[in-house]
Length: 154
Image 1 (cartoon, rainbow, N blue to C red):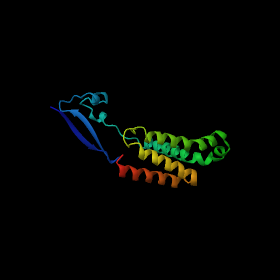
Image 2 (image 1 turned 45 degrees about the vertical axis):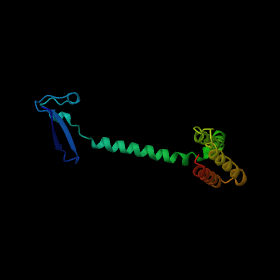
Image 3 (image 1 turned 90 degrees about the horizontal axis):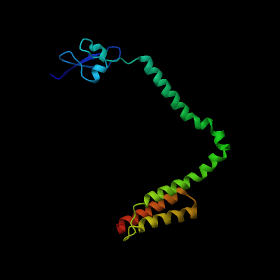
Image 4 (image 1 turned 90 degrees about the vertical axis):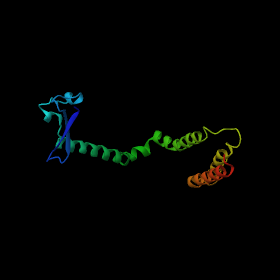
């Protein structure tokens, strides 16, 4: 006969705990390791410790608060640090190069598949050199790419 599942209600927790001992009074696999020996099905259930949960939530809150407050507290150090300033200047260019390479990685040079990506990249670069406006460059490049992609079917 398969395992019989009894569900017991814990009044102080308001949740249900499953206890699984088979009908013959023995235990199966994991349940035996957890202490369900037939006579003591009580051992199979584990109660949630209220103080443990409260401490866990306090630690999570403290770490989240610290991670969100760190940039504000360390702002003066970020402004004075030369390495952070260099990374801030070089990172946008590096991200754009990686995104561009990722976009054209599967572009075939056979046929006209390469036209739309090439025109999109050229339009983006020219608009950025002309106006130095990131929003204008991105919108112009995306529009030119999309129009060509859907008109020539590349």
